[in-house]
Image (cartoon, rainbow over all chains, first blue to last red):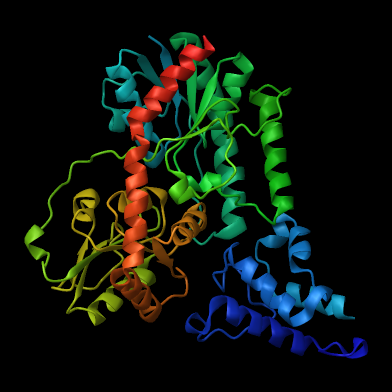
Length: 97
Length: 385
């Protein structure tokens, strides 16, 4: 989506927003702007079974460059609690650089 | 004649199945006793029950907003582990006084399993929720490691440190109060025996039966007893979805916390308590938080569900319901009347949901319930002698 030199965090956030829209489906996505501070569980009501869909959505957008399950599996309990869109964006930006 | 000691947590849904199994065993001439909180056990098993008292820690009230991994952290740190440490001396005392041939330990009272292994008593796991047969920590290995380290420390204090298996699953016999038709076709070990739910008949209480309209589909709405304060928005949206369908649907809403200010009318009946089992014989659908008891009771009666899981094992139970084709999931925190209404229409109008619910109900009845569990326990006690 972008050349290595110009990884655009805004673009990554937009892609994550699109992926989450697909996971939650548009019906349930009204009035929910996705920001860096948006929390997966507390704000979006995401459950562990939703991660399967999120994984395939991200793979469809970034291919093998982004390995969401491996990143998620590396998180400690304290990091999973309150996990935000910003933390995922930072990981993706890091992988695209 | 064998002697069985049931080790139970202070949780109604976990004690009830053991009450049915214990009654079955007693009827066959065996001796049964409990280790737990006497007030709780006697309330459910009757004042004649032989109960060896266990200390129960002053448990923290869990903040209701905790969900997901935060709820899991709280459950282990503030409930399972302190409960096990507090109960261990009482369980040991019960073993010395009662002399059981077999300990039947609830999956959430680790003290039963760990004291049994330390004292060399054969133990059986009583698993009252289907969720334990799904891997809740799939994809989150660090959380699994954290739980395993808590269990290892606990085992050093009250169990046999030489053992390494997960004490929530007896290596010898696990009584699963569900069936693979709901829990899923996993790779289950030979020690797991599916006996189906052991439903307990409860006094029905008063209900205005004349309120039910024969010409409309009746929907039950229940979030269980533990989610009263967080349920206001969701229950109000359920009521609104039903009112929009008032010509063909009516709902009985359980509201133990009195959070719903809406007045009852001919479309919606709001009550603090509902005679759930009796109503299920007349209901066409259930909207539930996917607590295991409500799900099991609904499916027993062949009634499909709209599931809105909140926390703990509920997302897993909800996933089992949808995977089995017996219901539709909505999101507890986000779904409004539109999503809830669409899900309700699906389970009421598309017959495959009811057919799947009936198939699971049939598997429950065929599994044998408390009588089958008692037979497994009798055989286990004889084999271990």
